[in-house]
Length: 178
Image 1 (cartoon, rainbow, N blue to C red):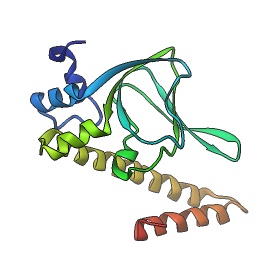
Image 2 (image 1 turned 30 degrees about the horizontal axis):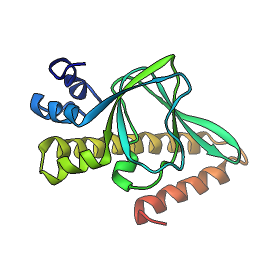
Image 3 (image 1 turned 90 degrees about the horizontal axis):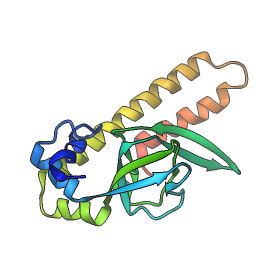
Image 4 (image 1 turned 120 degrees about the horizontal axis):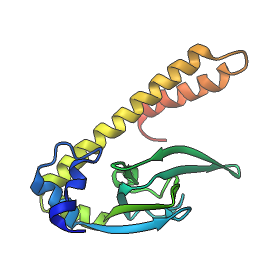
């Protein structure tokens, strides 16, 4: 991969639409290309968060464990960012990221390299943070719509769980801490 060709991957990602060519080059230079095979993990639930990833090719399943059951909560593909939530929270991983296709190629950005861009007042880092905030706000909006649909269509006995979830969401939006 050469910088002249592949730095544009950042510009075509879900967070890169506002990046200039030079800013995309900065993010690419802070990235490391990694290839994974089917069922390999980028990270596991509970791991320390040390990086985030841009998916160059392939699909990544995001999985959450609860009571011994593993549930796929999302599948992300080319142009998606994986591991970004921990960038903002600096908490341990809340889910597992596992390769769903025969192979996946990612650009890995270590937190320390990204934080160096922030410390150096690089516009690329700030634009990425704004784009991540927009991405997360969009996800929350979709969750809100889904909760409203579920509450409107819930049958007998289902309402209690949905009301508990709605209360949780309201507390989250109001307090932002637990």
